[in-house]
Image 1 (cartoon, rainbow, N blue to C red):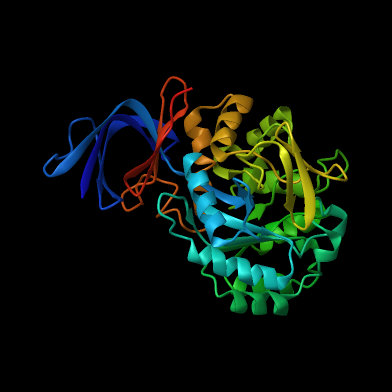
Image 2 (tube, one colour):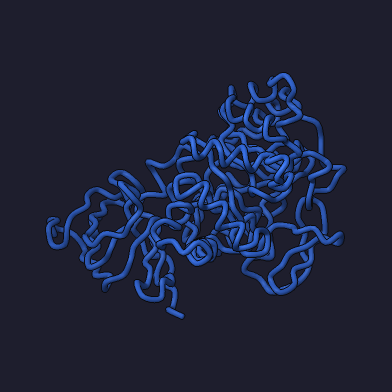
Length: 395
């Protein structure tokens, strides 16, 4: 099946993120050609006039624990399919399910269920797994139950992946400053795992050394790590330095205005720019749901006015959608929407090595697309592999 999308401005990442007027040819759910307006062949193609809208790639969330009442660690297959449809309706077409701290057997069971629902009809597609748990520093555990944490153990990690039999890409958040001889880092690297520093007490020097080893990202930058201090820049300053040197590192940001204040988002974006900023939701089961009581990482969580906290008052994930994060970043930092889109599409896909397939509208990529009202910058429709799955009424 051929489709020719016309009368729209399509997102491109290079040479700088922008929306450019033109048309897009899709065949069997894959982008096969770009062109200036009225230049691509129409033979045998369904013509889809988008009425002057903007078109971006579908969003890619590589750090999310759940939404729509479900948590990836505990959801059954029915709930996972419901979650997939909810992600898609919010503009997220590709999701890396994130498992919080839990017993190892729970990780194995969760991976099996997620694998069974990775191609839910009319829902976002699951890609790989992100383990954010177990190997965290107890002093920076946040909403993770202390009894579920454990020291770094490369042998245990290798055995766990064998038991899970889950395909790459895979991410792992850990307090890597406790890996004194680098042996855990080496095991993870050999297994093809993308390592991220998080829930950590790492100093500037320790983080810089880890980046030298090949560390690729900081998990929810600023949160659950030492603050940026005038006598010790910590992990955050090391990230900023590496990004300004052009090193291949990313700083995750939860851009809800709660986890990080708008002025600190602006500060971070000035250092990281659109090449090193990675928007995530870190969403939990209460995302897309009314206020109420939920759980995450073995702890009860209360959501009130969209703010999720444990009984101790610690933030416990967010109720953010990734499209909201894109809008917030553009507003907080006064940057074009096209720049903010890159931070939630191409950047997370590139981190995980799937940028040729998703997070882009380049030739060869899946035609996962968002149709955006050019004036209001709100979602009008969501396409998955060229098929319109969700139409969103303008607000």
